[in-house]
Amino acid sequence: MDKVKYLPVRHANIAITYKCNAKCKHCSINADDVSNKRLDKEMSTDEIKHAIKQLYEAGVMFLGIAGGEALLHEDIYEIVKFSKKNDMFTSIASNGLIMDDAIAKELKKCDLDGFLISLDHTDFTIHDKIRGVDGIFEKAVDAIKICVENGFYVSMGITPMRDNIGVFADLVEKGVQMGVKGITFSSFVPTGRGRLKDDLTPVEWGEFYVLVRKLTKQYEGKVNIHFHDPRLNVLGEQTSSINGISGCLAGINHCYILPDGTVNPCVMLPKSIGNIKDGNLRDILRNYQNDEKVFERSNLIGKCGGCKYKSKCGGCRAVAYAYTSNYNEADRHCWIKT
Image 1 (cartoon, rainbow, N blue to C red):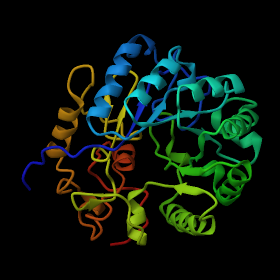
Image 2: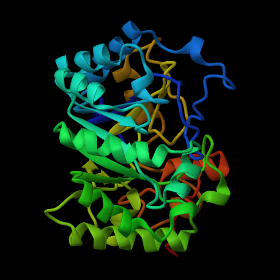
Image 3: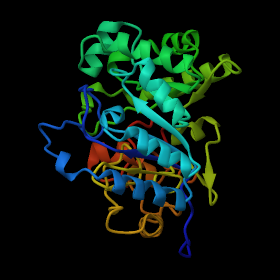
């Protein structure tokens, strides 16, 4: 295939700090300002704004601001204002611990569009265990209610894992009852603090995808269920398609910037493809799109390399990397026998 010029990413996440007031067992970057000693490597506020400007120039339309805990950043309001000046739909991912009405109202003045607040179980003891903080369930529920009352687009984040298997439908119903507009399921990937023992089996993942389709139809018109996963294409769901390729669009329709400026193809794939402090984001992404042959998918090996669904799905590269240290290997979540 001829080299592509550059296909603009539309969705991006930027983690603005490693600081965090929780210790979630599945944190992808293992955010911890004490043990990892990375605070001195964080981008300055000016560097964060420069990164956001590059994201806009690279074609990003939807920006998620995260951490760590984004609300702990001392310049969070300034950062949100800058993002909105660059005409991007901007949301903040939060665990809800420090959210209150005053913070919500101040962010509303900054024209923030939405919040993603995590709730991983209907049982407060299990949610607190997953998030590593006693009382965080109650804080998250309060945060969701506060953000709904202040008119934000609120999406409730759910990460399927061993601890919450069986309560996904109940969580969706709880979100609807609280007035959220979206439910966002994020695949559990055993990276960062995530451990293999907390992952679902391939068969369980297959059953989960079927459940997501069922819930999407059941709650149509009541709540938007978001689950961007390449394997949905195998079930007949058509996800985003670019250049004739659908499925995994890491580094194509999505990218992720860490607090130190490192650019990764996606939130769950800890593969550095450059640093935004050292180079232009468009160049970084274009080089990745071409060098890794992401459109051809000819570098894929193992089960994914020979799969008949390769062009439609491509498997999750983050899962492959987490299990094998090779992002071109087989996706261990896949239940399909080919």
